[in-house]
Image 1 (cartoon, rainbow, N blue to C red):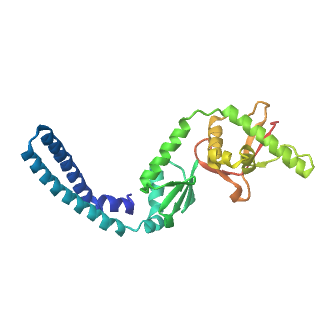
Image 2 (cartoon, rainbow, N blue to C red):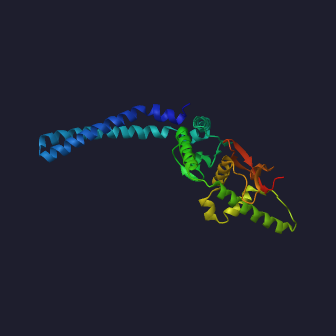
Image 3 (cartoon, helix red, strand yellow):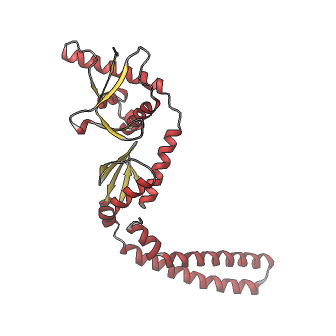
Length: 264
């Protein structure tokens, strides 16, 4: 299904784009004639070519004016507020991408997409993105996700890092409560904060990328760290504390806590 933006660009402006192409090709030809005539010293051809150039410049100005008159007629804010949602979901489905959340904030792991009609922009993990055709945005997300999936991932190293962060956070919480707690559950967000204690580290490794690495770990099937403990991810009552993590099959799940425990 095409969006209202697609219809405006591809139908309402179709004739203008056609005129733009025609004038552009004609200008290329006449510029070559002008240069060739000048190089050969043929002033008669040069005068004819310059006359033609003037005619084309006039047509070019008419095309420009038509664009300038029509573009303000499209209400981009209204499109982003009312016409974007359905077309975007259909575009994501066409790319085979799972999505969580609802307008105006979506999660397509590891990206958070925020539609901001008042600013006429979409942000991806906080970065402005102005290519607003829904299928183009979905295609961009698919390309970036495929690129991330193709990047090397050391599941064993990431598992060791999680175990170290878990032990660090557990020790901190035990010290705070002054009681001995074994194999307790720890919030995933606390683990993330342990891994990225400083703002520059959080910018370099956003929370969504942490969730994406959890997905890659689940997909690898490696859940035992070197000491033999098994990693377990669990739900949390407060949904605001949960992370959207794709499971081994690529289906979105809401995990909020983790723990390492010894089986048996």
